Image (cartoon, rainbow, N blue to C red; front, top):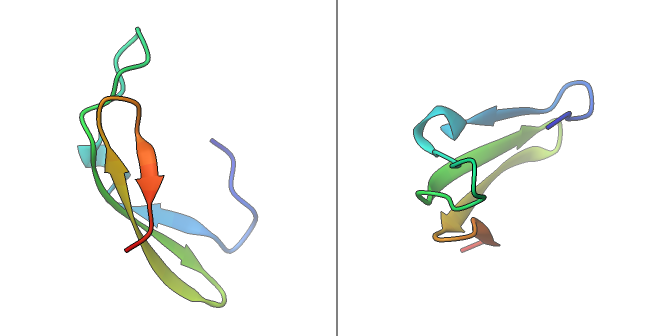
Length: 51
């Protein structure tokens, strides 16, 4: 996944996506110049939920 310059992800290393497209789920944080946003990825398809 390519992000705009000055953006980054934290916690993505703890989310596992299998070759069949199923994911383990987890929480990541999207860091942008405008601030940080926490995103929960729900299994089995990494559905993004912003709390």
